[in-house]
Image (cartoon, rainbow, N blue to C red):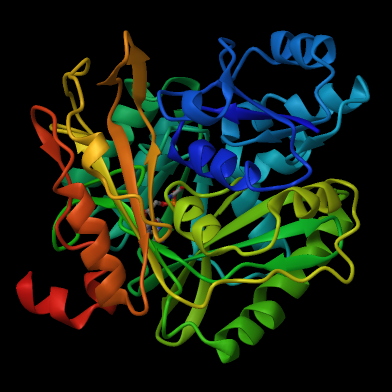
Length: 428
Ligand code: AMP
Ligand code: GLY
């Protein structure tokens, strides 16, 4: 089969790496791809938001199956457009994509169906939101309604911070139209879990839990990022928790989708927060997480392609996934300065020193190949993923590889996996 993956991050490199192992695959393409995807697929120079161009190219090339990585094409309706042209595609339709593309939409759904989530108010007027903040309790969280590439959520400790954030989002329009409405909600304290699974419209097939490291600096300090690292599984998130989530969240959520006419066939990513023993839905995403996909796909033993096809065709019944029980971790190497300003175009050295080990993978995120050199091209540059008999071994293997790879101003967190890795906790 000829497969097209849409996107250009570490998640898409991991998807291609996994799809490449399927005996069903004859040719792989990636639009637009990066320096790493170019090594296992043919990169296609079409941006992710050019839905019509992507569709015409897929028709012309007789692509058998397309897998969508990022949220932007999903929210622009790529799945609806491909299906109209009888192209098979994995991902949610535009209506279901609103769960991620509009925080107002998802909060209203959560409230209407009484799912556990932070108490919230919704505003489309700056002055009303501002007067609400004047009398609110702190800390609180302000969320821009629309997609903001991970920059739309502000945790505010006091009134001054909240007023500033609100002004930037709603008045100065720092995030453009994404900030036309906001959700202002209570701050919940607790442990976060990324809970992902395949949903074929009716049947939900959960993945093992994973956790990402959203903050830029060691010790969970600094600004929020797209993700500086991840690990899976989450040791304390056991069978009992899985069952609890099925009952408290998945069952009512699937009912809500049915009542609202949301046909959800794709990946559902629920950002969970466990506070005082209770699970809350912080957010929905309608795609694989990045870097959660890297640690999950590295542990998946089953062939990914038939499972994605079964999801798209509502045929998940009876399908089970097989997982490597060993833990995996992912360290994200970034351009110094990320998530704020940084320089790109540096040559990456030492890639050839990364050992050929089936328990280690190097996924490219923001890289480009130029005249046989691999150059940095964005904030999150490379992902080093490793598996081990325990977290200690996985973490050690990952960092051993990280230290082989260099470029000017490279930065990475030194404490990925520290929460589940006692020896690292001692060091940090
Ligand atoms: P979101 O995109 O909604 O998941 O928010 C991004 C990050 O902000 C989350 O992963 C949390 O770390 C934090 N966050 C969002 N909402 C809340 C909340 N109500 N209470 C505490 N932290 C939150
Ligand atoms: N790692 C968080 C996300 O993919 O949204």
